[in-house]
Amino acid sequence: MNCTRIFYLALFVVCSSLLGFGLYLEHAQGIEPCPLCAFQRMCYIAITVIALIAAIHNPKDIMRLVYSPLVLIAAVIGAGVAGRQVWLQHLPPELVPECGPGLEYMMDVFPFAEAMKMILSGSGECAEVHWTFLSFSIAEWSLVCFSLIAILTIVMMFKLKSK
Image (cartoon, rainbow, N blue to C red; front, top):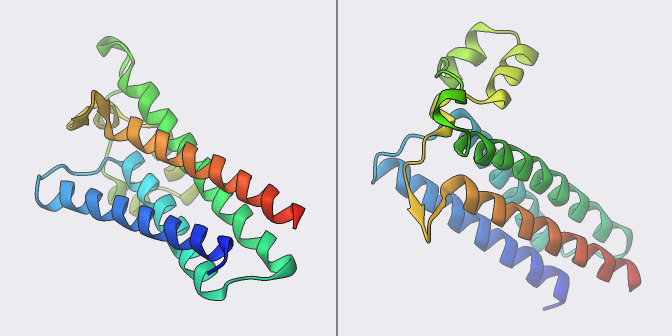
């Protein structure tokens, strides 16, 4: 197996595992995802799908430079959303925004652009920390994971460009 296929397979396994753990926290531990968490999941799903397609395709030549930017875009968006949630979690309690309506309600009632603005601005529920590991919240771990994915993808892009 070549380096490209191994990278995308590893990315697929890692992101699938992260999504699986998120589902475990939701269904077994009863931790409901906030709207920002749902958007982070969407980014992980996008990365997982792109990585699986790239691993199966095993791209050669110019196609090798198509999948990495797509992964990078999803990772940067995910890191931005996770960073916003981390920021909300570290606000003093008096500055935390009030809880807003649920994700499904916002998507059904408001125009798409307005719903996106409301969701990405976050709410009080996005500032709550329900679970930690090594004193990092889920959002902080997600920010670390998205950042690592972005960095490794950039490294892979330069490695592929040099070949």
